[in-house]
Image (cartoon, rainbow, N blue to C red; front, side, top):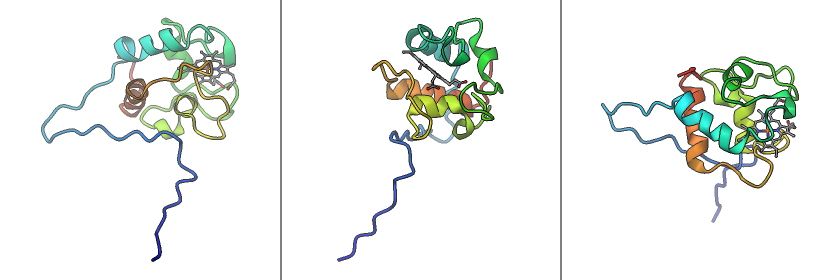
Length: 129
Ligand code: HEC
């Protein structure tokens, strides 16, 4: 018997399924100020007033991320609105190979819910909402 085995080598280590939305059900909006920022404050800000040239403080995070060129992954952008796969921040938090350290690198990896929130927020246009 021959087994057809798909090549999963190039996929990231974390698979995040799309949320199941019933027809007619409103899409769950991810809000920057009330959902994404608290993740940065809790898990990132201790290193990211400065490290990587990136300030994730409450008043600085948005303008330091959206459509801003990275320090370490030039010419790629930190966040491309509507496109998580093109956003370096997404690769850093989801542990994509070839993007160096997974964020946060101090053993407190984000849980699936936090990752989903960040992913949804980027895919929904990375609004300052
Ligand atoms: C223990 C310290 C530490 C924590 C906590 C941390 N980072 Fe980092 N981060 C770094 C260092 C050091 C770099 C630079 C080296 C690199 O790019 O891997 C960096 C780089 C980055 C970069 C690339 C910046 C650029 O422009 O090149 C992003 C994006 C990032 N971190 C996001 C995050 C996020 C989001 C969190 C929280 C979920 C986080 N980091 C938590 C230390 C940390």
